Amino acid sequence: MVGKQTICSYCFGYAGGFAIGSRYALLFGYQYVDIHYEVKAILKDFTNVFYASSIAVAELLFLFRIGKIELKLPLKTENDILEKILDFRIQTVMFSKQNFETYLSLQIKDNHKDMKDHLIISQAISDRITLISSDKELDFYENQKLKWIYNKR
Image (cartoon, rainbow, N blue to C red; front, top):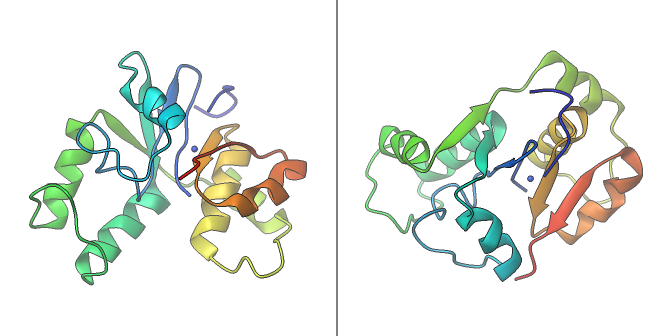
C-alpha cells in the first residue's frame, strides 16, 4: 500500500480508494451527519475502496467503551463496531515502522496537542494518503507533504 498516490482526523485513501476514521467510520452507508456534500460524494462512490487507520479504529472503540460517543446504528459492543466497519467495506491500515519514523520528524503546530491526530497525520504523509478532516489546523502540515481535503461542516 505504501507509495500509491491518492486521497483521509480521520480518513485515508489510496489510488481509487479512501480510508475513513473514527468519526466517519460508522456514518458511512447509513447517515452523513456533519459531512460536507463533496465528502459525501466520495463516500457514496461505490468504485472507491475504503481504509481506516488502526489508530482511528482504536480511538473509536475506546470512545465507545467509555461512553463518550453514541452511535447512530444499533451497536452494543466493540465487536459490533468492527463487524459494521467490515460491512461498510472498510479495511484497517496498520501503523508501521515507517509511520513512526515520520511521526518522529513531524513538526507539530503550536497548541495542536492531540497525539492521535499526529499519528494519523504521520501515517497519511508516509503512506502518501490524502486525509479528509474537519480540522482546519491541518493546513499547517501541508509543507510537510500532507495532502488533505477539508470537510466543511
